[in-house]
Figure 1 (cartoon, rainbow, N blue to C red):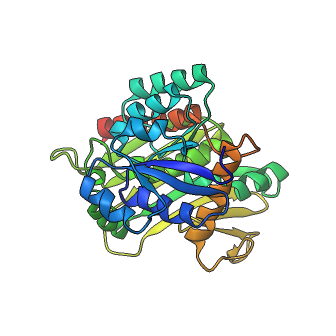
Figure 2 (figure 1 turned 120 degrees about the vertical axis):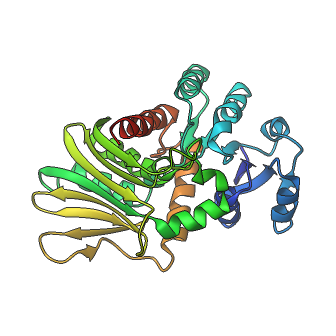
Length: 325
């Protein structure tokens, strides 16, 4: 493996470009090779990164000698095919979430990954940063008995920005708030408490015209811990991303995707240092985690099996929520 781990990027949309920019500045990884089916976009994006080699197709990227890890950042319907090809070639593969949108295809991918022995991981936010801090806090028993957790998401501005960047996100076929945002928190719930069970769900919006859902209300249970969920892309107001774990002695809450606050009954206070750029700080931590995973070290990146459990829960939420409306 190269001194800096070489990443081959499949997909140079908004998420792929974020990885490209942050990996280029990281000490342990580097963007080495890239492919996007939109030739004009590929040319435009890579013009600012002359150190990254452009290739003509996915297979050329997978087989390139400078690629140590294949990173799949294309739309979800393509994840299984690209990840499967990387596994077949023996290349470690890092996939964006969701693992997929078709449960049968993802189940087959998980089986292939297990049989191959090739390292595989999925890029959930709470594999690092606040997710690690929460996991350590719970393991130490700091919170006392956990009464439950709750997720509140308001993302009208998020939806306006992200749906403009990637129009497929606005469509029910591959996108939506559940798959794109709530999946991060279901992964966190699964990581902290155990398997996600959907008790009840209601979904509103989008189904008639093929658009994605606009409102979700749900009750979950994760390893015996009740988790409530309210998420919406409707109504005026600033974006809100809050996941709170309510403990008997202390409570913790993630805020704004990357922040972490705590309370012992008094006002909420930041936990740890607050970086000047929370997103960049998280990305650096995640890339360290990815480097540890790719190098065979100790890491907290979830594998395809863990991501498939999250996908199963998300698709269950979608199905039950549509049925019960």
